[in-house]
Length: 295
Image 1 (cartoon, rainbow, N blue to C red):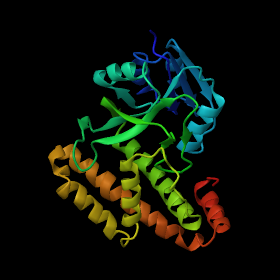
Image 2 (spheres, rainbow, N blue to C red; image 1 turned 135 degrees about the horizontal axis):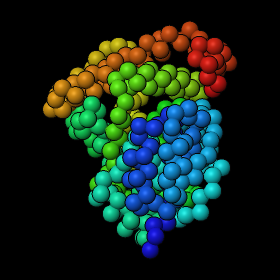
Image 3 (cartoon, rainbow, N blue to C red; image 1 turned 180 degrees about the horizontal axis):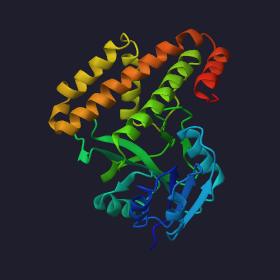
């Protein structure tokens, strides 16, 4: 029986990754929808060369809004939907289990993510295992409306963690990686002040896993520490206490850049925006003027 699964892939200039991603998905998906943010490389040509791939385009604001637009405006006629990033692909064990789960009862399906940095799987420092809900019965998922660290919310559904997992393996260079995380740091700063100016009640997020609740509460505790010190503390915990040093040279660079440099950059932007973040109107004006973003 053909697997009744539609994959949604968000893209922008993903010519390095999209072929690998689609080849992985075609092993278990009956349809693939690529939602592109007007790429100007060969991403679209590569996508159109694959059977079962539909390409639509929509302007990008943030990841959550783009994914929700995909769920609301693309035709999904399959029993299941799965979300995949363009630089991700599944291992064979996960593919076998996805096929089995897709023939069973409805559930929210979570996967273990393996981050690959500088061609090395980063196993330590709290990076693995991270489980993320990425597959659900079509029509039963909503994307959490956040500028950063959004989750897929599937309420009232049994959660199953697949044996095996997927690789988050970006092939671009460190300059691209730091530029991406610079952009992420802006989104993190925006999310920080949005929550401060308009606190969010997350008690009804029944689709959250226990690990997500723990992570969110740890982040709230982290934000109570003094700025800059907390970035150094976070790196130290990851690298020493959580054994990040066992990831070797690539692991040092990853945990330093992602665990210290990135968090310190967020703190700098939080401080920079502080005098403009006394109310929502002023904050919106500041973000529009400095970053060209509408919030």
